[in-house]
Length: 308
Ligand SMILES: NC(=O)c1ccc[n+]([C@@H]2O[C@H](COP(=O)([O-])OP(=O)(O)OC[C@H]3O[C@@H](n4cnc5c(N)ncnc54)[C@H](OP(=O)(O)O)[C@@H]3O)[C@@H](O)[C@H]2O)c1
Image (tube, rainbow, N blue to C red):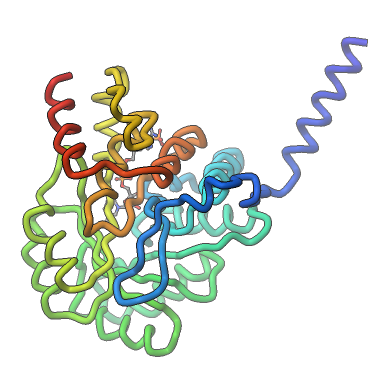
């Protein structure tokens, strides 16, 4: 009898593994209506304040079980109302893995696709764009960003053409290095872009000085990369006690503490934490629900980190 039950259990697990990854908003009930979203400046289009990064975490090549595991991560992302996914030709196999994982989702999820141009050769802008689209299995990108400002003078006019042709909807520029902030500032001042992406987290607040206020002034959407400082914030604090008053802004774990800090800045449209784990994705997406810390609480969050 025991053997029969064990065999039936194995068959059930096998059958479940073959099912497409389904997600449905109704299971979220009221939570969905409370999701924190921000308008893209100058438009009526809103984005959930937590998106997903894919550097390293989705670079898993052709390994089948790792691809399945990432499909589950993406499933958890969409289950909790996620929309914006950020990637780049620089991230190894990530674009191909995202394309694969998107095909596993049922029904087709509502996606805001954000990829990048990453080449020093101006003649490669269009061929790289087309290749990225085929990897993502998409017909167009919502946002195409110039990665690390690389050869931006050459790429920008081509991105404008793509936008005019309806092949992309928004143009962006990115960096994660303070040494490029001056150049980024000049582009933000004078060039026809819609989005900027740079690093901001509780260990690195450089952009509070100039770039974040400038984004508000210029009406630019802001995507924040490295919101967990590449995971270092989690490693430093995960064994420390979360303060009881974190509940005042509906924060229930350290990931939400760090992410809610980032997205509560008035200039920030969304943050794009990256993860390879379903449990971490659930924690991270939890940051896009409930209340955000007030300016007073943001100060208190810093004092607390210094004290533990
Ligand atoms: N110039 C650019 O355009 C540029 C530069 C840098 C980054 N980016 C983009 O921004 C995204 C985010 O930056 P990032 O990946 O460097 O750093 P990040 O999102 O700050 O941190 C990612 C790390 O945090 C860990 N993590 C995530 N959620 C966690 C949780 N709930 N609990 C514990 N650990 C957690 C992940 O490990 P686990 O896998 O174990 O969860 C991973 O190692 C990138 O993936 C990329 O898409 C763009």
